[in-house]
Length: 113
Length: 117
Image (tube, rainbow over all chains, first blue to last red; front, side):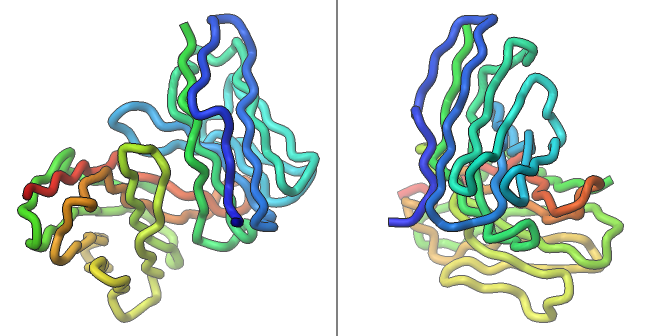
């Protein structure tokens, strides 16, 4: 089955630790995205990548980093510089950077205490 | 500034009735796209429907239709014959050109729909 996987579903970390969220897709999509969702709010774009080895900052990139070494993978690192990291993180992909339809993964709920 | 506004934090509808979820948008672009997504309690985002700014016909997908009024900058979602499984959060979104190149999707704050038996 083609799709996007995110692991783990729930993640707990202590304040001050970096944590990496996994996102893998087997849809052969060029573009991938990371969004953050806070309770009662819509999604906000953290980073996006239109092609391998290239990525761009979104609206709330501070305190986050990404890499895109392989087409299938777009991991997100939440660093200790992120002031309020507790949130629901969603990864998405699309055929390319122009295509309007995005396919979403199941999300990772990160709790930092 | 590009923005999506959903003014209904929560909505109730009786099963089998129709419901309209409101969405207004703001953009200076001539070409843009509008979407609706459904987010059940499990968290995944499910694409429902898309309307391009140059599409003359309102988009429809099964029980979902998008009431697109360009002059009023509104893109309301109509769900006909509501089902209990329609209870979820619904997000209106707009595809916009990003200042560093490429396109991004801007989301509204969402409307939580409750379907009553």
